[in-house]
Image (cartoon, rainbow, N blue to C red; front, side, top):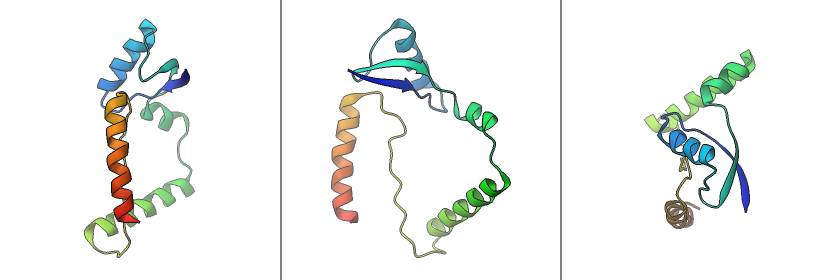
Length: 105
């Protein structure tokens, strides 16, 4: 049995489902939930970016914007999923992602 912490999504629906599982002692994908992780907003509040961190983020955001708008010739690959609460869906996604990887590299 694997142990995991619970990571709520920003939209809240998965977090509500997972909190229910956690509170009821239920399992999801063969994981036992140990505790609930803080939300992204709570993390940002506890650990604010330094000025250097803000500058790096601003530059990285611009780099991604340049790729998307065609201002850069770099190649951008965005990979998900953002949550993994259903084992069947995750396995399906991973198998499809593996085929994409073969085409990209």
